[in-house]
Image (cartoon, rainbow, N blue to C red):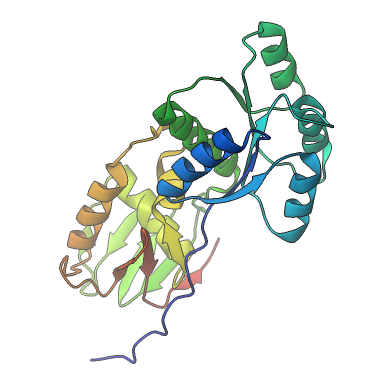
Length: 251
């Protein structure tokens, strides 16, 4: 039976990074690097511009230079740490003094990277901090909760998946976690990083491709055509959308 096509999904939300650096060349270099990696970047020269940026939009991470005109990076980091909504911070500085590094971490910085730095290391640290700070939002299976979608059923407590004919389909632990994340967010575009966070968490490396393998296997087990998937759709820009309507009960 054919169903009416789903409306086009809303644009996938990007990760927004506030870059606070007073050196124009370094600010452009780092900003361009992060944008090539797919991040949205707001470029600020000082704490005042950062405050204005935070007032205008949601910020996921702050890359903060230690030596700034006016209010220095340590003071800004302390303010951000004590704010009602805590923002993750990576401090970047030309100083190699351990005292500055330790002080920065003690007042709330999530990581510390001295200049000069390798661009790949910066990107890896950004991904690692984002993954750690997002982990609190990872969905957890609810014992006794049941899901129904397109004739399929999943018992989250026992991890039992049954096809429309009532036949049991075995899932690995990773495939179960991935399916659960999709079922908890149906008809929403989820980024690859979100799915990686929720299924792998701290175990995931910055260049982890496990999620791609698990998505392929899960599609196959759900009978989803890998070339023209109807159930787990690929969205341009690196996201995925679980298209069926999902009914939940229990839990």
